[in-house]
Length: 266
Image (cartoon, rainbow, N blue to C red; front, side, top):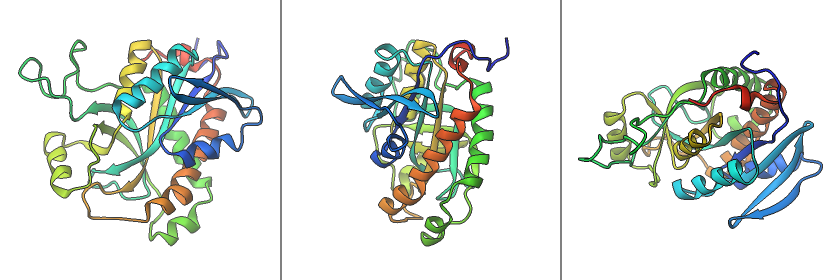
């Protein structure tokens, strides 16, 4: 059996960080049904004939962990795809670019001296890695999708160039990183970090606990250090939401049913 061979039709969990992103998906779901669980609204239905469950992640690590756990346990998803925005930290990561995580870490996890800084107690690691085969596919699909998405006008209007795709470390924490000093501290501790946000690493931890493959894809809305700003609402409406829609729809075409069961979460 190949790494991406179809074996089942369990739904795919689609987590969106922003309401605009979620709405762009719901607008194309012909049969979405609203289901309330754990104080959250989940939308169960189909996209491109594929069974999906779409939901807002919630803001922060605990909120996102609850959402991911419900997707895994209550809805039995085969995998989770998480989209949203993030602050850029890598030297070559510009506003408007997209980062696909091949590693995720909680930058505010510090149980020292009992455990090394950033290490997840009980797991013995600080970094969690999505399955390589799925990440390879996601990087390829994102690069192709961004060539087709109609966001040129919005990018130009915000003074942004053609988006580039990066693959690497995304870090998460219950802190909105926007000061240059905080950004520099993260880069000093984690020289290979590309982006920072508030949820992705805990979604990775939940997925590992449930043995679920996952992908985390972030559009860069700012430089997380005060050096580059755009109108956030315009960016989400005109860039991040179209990016999310194009990426998810392309992934639905590229990742067969059952990939979540065939790919071993690492």
